[in-house]
Amino acid sequence: MARVRLDHVRKQYDNGFVAVHDASFEIHDGEFVVLVGPSGCGKSTTLRMIAGLETISSGTLMIGDRVVNDVAPKDRDIAMVFQNYALYPHMTVFDNMAFGLKLRGFSKQEIRERVHRAAEILDIGGILDRKPRQLSGGQRQRVAVGRAIVRQPQVFLFDEPLSNLDAKLRVQMRAEISRLHRQLGTTMVYVTHDQVEAMTMGDRIVVMNGGHIQQIDEPMNIYHRPYNRFVAEFIGSPSMNFVEGDIVVNEGMSFVSSDAAFSLKLENEVTEKLRDWIGNKIVLGIRPEDIYVAGGHGVPERTGHVTATIDVVEPMGNEIFLYARAGAHRLVARVAPQPLPQPEASVTLALDLSRLHFFDPETEINIAFEAPGVMA
Image 1: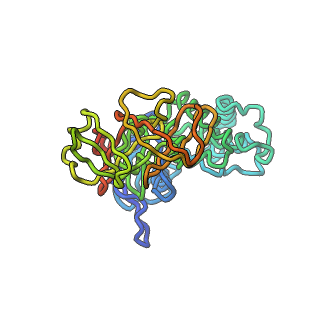
Image 2 (image 1 turned 45 degrees about the vertical axis):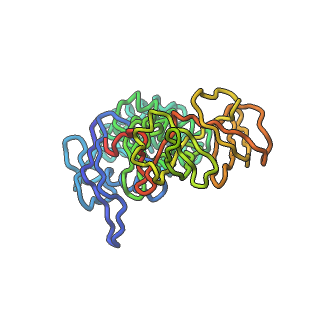
Image 3 (image 1 turned 120 degrees about the vertical axis):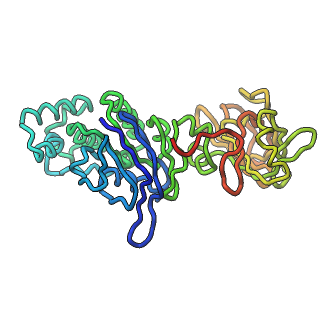
């Protein structure tokens, strides 16, 4: 096992495009860290630089106590699991898993022991004599992971490993990779665009956008205390609601939406942090699960009410997604199953005043909470 450390790592291509700007963070020994963000954010490029598949334009990359900027991939003591499995179609499962060990000159006995040990961990001992074409997608992914396990590397790297699987298998493999990490205790770096995978698997999450690191923290801290609007919008499904408006003083401090369709009298806990914003534009954010139907189930005591018109009602079984509009602003609420009016009917929404976020409209930084710093 080993730590991985990036100090001001940058990737710039010959055409001038910068894929990763000044990435600095440390992955601790035995930690599971997820790099997450939209397509083109630089997460896979960062992973490929750790693997040695992309050269580093500037900065320092360390694995363990060794600077590996110029070390070949095969000498970095890492193992990578790709999106497309990359199995040899003419080889059996056993031979696919054993191939790298044979190239490194391991004895037949050692190879046999390592392959069978990995097969037992992944529950694929019964398919070692099959060819890849005889396997399901989930089995192929297990074989790809097994091929990495037998190497017993210091660091595992996963590049979108579940994106080719159907929804049910993704959930299953998510749990299996998390279990594998607990069992092996090896440092793991996992790349995905799926924020659900990031939230459920990572000890910490690195959120990236446009080649920049937006925030590094534990999953629930990122969810409840996003550093900026991008993080707040990207993490969470449905996404956080955003409403532009103003902070005004009238028998206390209130937020008034930009079209004056509604106002919310603010709690004392947040007013002190917003005094410099009185009379200025600001962006309010609130997550769908913090919006309730007034008079419905589980409404908190301290709420502000908004009159809205229902657009769409989506029953999800154990919850309902309620899409509504208040003036020019659209809101989505995630509410408990309950009788609701039909679309185009009026509804009173209750917003949990203790769960409001406020963002600077120019910098987009979260100003209402003392959000953790970008770096960790």
